[in-house]
Length: 295
Image (tube, rainbow, N blue to C red; front, side, top):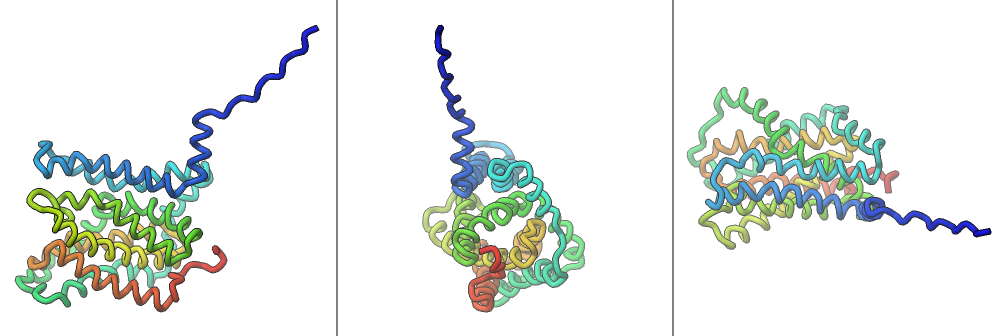
């Protein structure tokens, strides 16, 4: 009588192994996916600005801002499953926050940019003056920027997925500083376009002038964003609003100051946001509002 042979246990599938690796290093793969998607989508627009491709690729360039959102959605599904995705969507819709946070976001953040512009010598030359149309155009532009100018595409990733994990691993201040660097470097393709003072006719000198300012600026903004995030129950919706309040003045208010170029604008924003970020660090002793029970 033949003894039945024992069947070998099924070998793990390639998909199972990949999922295991992704779960082990969620932040690494989050940043990898976010960078890859966004940078690939940036290529057609960059090539068109340099005259290699012909056509209007601005819509694709706008879509590249959704790389962080896509990466967050994929990695949340892999690491936390359906329940994690439900929590992520809930935080995107979570609007409950004290009125003072809405006031700071909607008025305080634009004010920081304007103060930074005004204190720069020569910035008021040829100032266009405030026009009644501004009162109508600003809210409409704010909504457009929120949906298509970066905030909605980025914040579910930077603040929704990365920040909670980086704060838990490195603490609120160091986690935010690291996120600020990663957030800045994600923008590197922009420096090959006119959006960040690059494009045809510019060289390495322009990059070396603009990038360090942008790095410190984005890191300062990240500190302010973390402070808001930690005081609004990790609301991604509030983070989206705050991001929109950073970007919208550049579209609506800055054109009122013809003397302000890309470098001057980044310096102006750095003055306002830099001072605010330093005050937040000092007043919170580097805690940035991070709850002690989450350590």
